[in-house]
Image 1: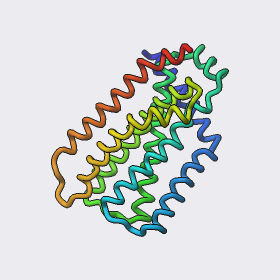
Image 2: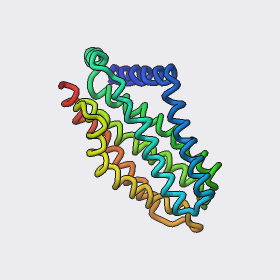
Image 3: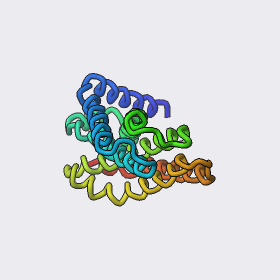
Image 4: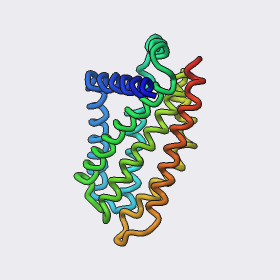
Length: 220
């Protein structure tokens, strides 16, 4: 157990150092986020709450695709063979899930700040929406990390991610959109805790699937 934790932490630090050294990737995503929200501001000004909420989750989806889906594309065959010799498949996929979850958590907070700055703040319960945006960002990152692992091993990254991602991500987005509606209502309604628990259960299911299925891809 201790050795597995050390492997996960070492692989996580490797991804973090690569992200710090290759800053153009991180800043490129930030530029994409800022420019997209600025274009929305020029086009719509300060939209009403329903439109604001829908735009936010749509932007989150595209941010996740740009920030997370590349995680397996930068790993060459030789590098994967090296990781195979020093760590197991479970440690490798868990380190990727952890790194991408933290990356998407940061991106979610940045995009939420820019949304409030440029498109106004129609939220009645900002803290509830901050919690949901963080949870939603982590959830999206887990799904797309798992899909990126499958697509990278199949060597059909873009097409396969689109085919597999659509039926998996739509129910999750609908659940996040429904849960975030509570943050726009004047009176805090019940049911938020149950929806958060359901989203967390879906996240745990994705992690379990990744841990169980990725070793079979790893052996190929």
